[in-house]
Length: 155
Image (cartoon, rainbow, N blue to C red; front, side):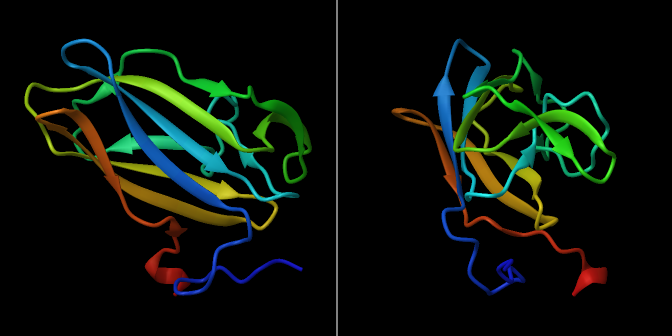
């Protein structure tokens, strides 16, 4: 039975996302996104070469922020059968940490970002908004609660 995850309802058991800052050198900050994936679920990896709208992604409100390193998954995604296109593609099946370094514009921020992906096979899109900001003791992230990303037309 698939859990109902409309806004205001509980998330699937064992599902969560957290975002952390990892300072590198001047102007470059890494993000570490921890994704707890419920048993029996999967997420299409950002490393998939297929053009899935629901694969894992991190985006920024400030379009001048750009990747400063390759995206790394730990553990590494595994090939999984994507039933809609009937192909094998990289998927995240277990709790995974996704890291990437970002080139930031000058300043202390705040820089607003968003993690987005579709949790399969439930076919439910999720987002997590976060803010990266330089403070006296270094970089910090503030993030809200993960929530279904239903568009207005789906409400």
